[in-house]
Length: 271
Image (tube, rainbow, N blue to C red; front, side, top):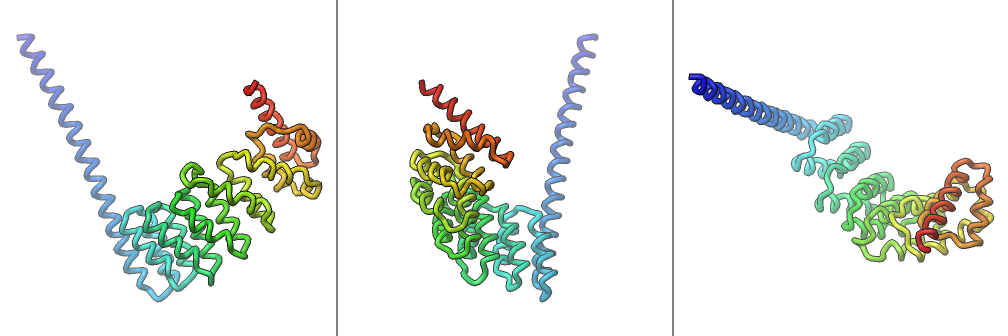
């Protein structure tokens, strides 16, 4: 009798467990369905609202659609990225950052090549840089030839953020050009965006640190020092960096110390 009761108890527990997980699964499905219904309603409203003649309505439509990262939204935002009103286009381009896909890369690359509006081009390049995709390398190379330093800066950030193993020696070929760019901002962007250290970069960075004209350009000097981390510092450059340990700029002092310590660690490991 006792055995029969125990068996019945186990069956009841098993039944309750199965029932619990069944209801849990149903609740998840219900939640997913509700979320999808919300999306379908919202994207439909956004598409209808986008037909408005008023740019504010169209921008609101873009903001509404961008909350839902689905393929229908991507197509909607791609369309909105060519809106006649700039503020709507900018919002659409920024929202496309959710979609690292070949079609979105193609749309943004086309926008980045438009010569009549550098603001929207800059937004497109910034979004493409977030993707860190080898597929974007060509548009960054194309954009670096631009006369506008802000476009060149965005192009350099994008190009140098890509994994160098996936695009050959393109970054090595462009670093000598970038480090001598007329714009200090472009040079700083390149140095801060370096994803790896190449031995061919060392003499170029070294020469910039040794220039007396750069000693008071603290932001640039900090970027140069950061780029030196990972290299073994030669005697002449070591003297200059030790002088920077008493710089008036606190960040320069900190980065100088880091470079010297890192160099010493590498030297010790090589012995």
